[in-house]
Length: 405
Image (cartoon, rainbow, N blue to C red; front, side, top):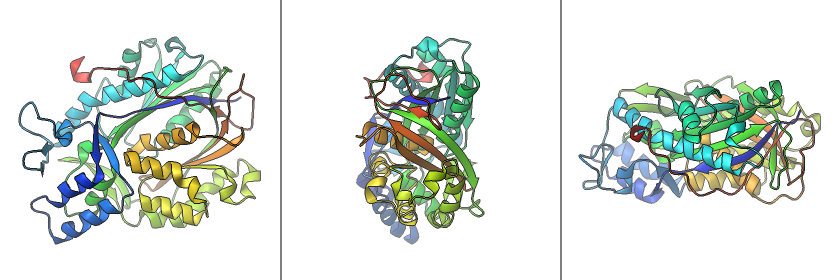
């Protein structure tokens, strides 16, 4: 059967940060050693990022209600709250992003109402609370309280693809199912200043954001592009377990993002792609650049450079990933959905263009997806896999934070 991602929408917190301004703040921190003084400008300038978003009003120079917790705008000092304080802000702020992205995806999905949602899958690795975001999406959107709920936690940047794969499996097992998938990450809660190279790179890359998709196997008319979900694969590279990791420390979650990660990807991306493309033997015989679209998780500019060079892709095929990185930074699990939305919202030369997606995370894990972009159609046509949709972002739905409920 054909399983389609029929709408894909995003949501961002209200504070936008110019990368140059954040760089200057980090470079001016007291206690930064000679190594940090040299690495901060280099990492920020080489990031390929112009702006990022954060839920932290203090970073937007807003006057705090009491004493500053994360950033003192008067002294330009970056503060170092405990993990408990950081997670408390996650519990307060994450719900609004989850519900807003989910509401937009539902509103944009033609032929689907709140009563049609049978399953909710939420994804996040930047905080924890219970009842969790899956519960609050059901409550916030007024879904049936009997909706089945799942949460994928702490998987990192690749987690959107396992969520979509699970949604596809649910729809194949239950033809009337309609699954709402929502990823939201508040990465900036864990930013800190340090001389450590991994910490500096993480501070230069990560932002906050959310994305949501509606997935179903039901045959519904569509006046916009839809995305068929064809196949998914998971591959662990032979090396790299220590090069990318995500640990819980006393002062936030600690990201390990070694400088060797792009080289690991460069050395193993071809073998990681092989199981995915084996599902369509016709693709195996063609140059990678003949697959029309590439949705590569922009873990950093050097990763995109390695993928483009190793696979001999055309520069324009990496534009959706590079522009997502430029405008939003790395938002962990939500990021590759922003890239897919960029592709879906763009023009198509013809219906049936293929999309190859890849995301990388701790392990080192490579999650990949093969999809097909279809133009507007009446009923979806069965094909060798599965397909999906995207529309304009509706006006934001105001949803109070969890603390205000």
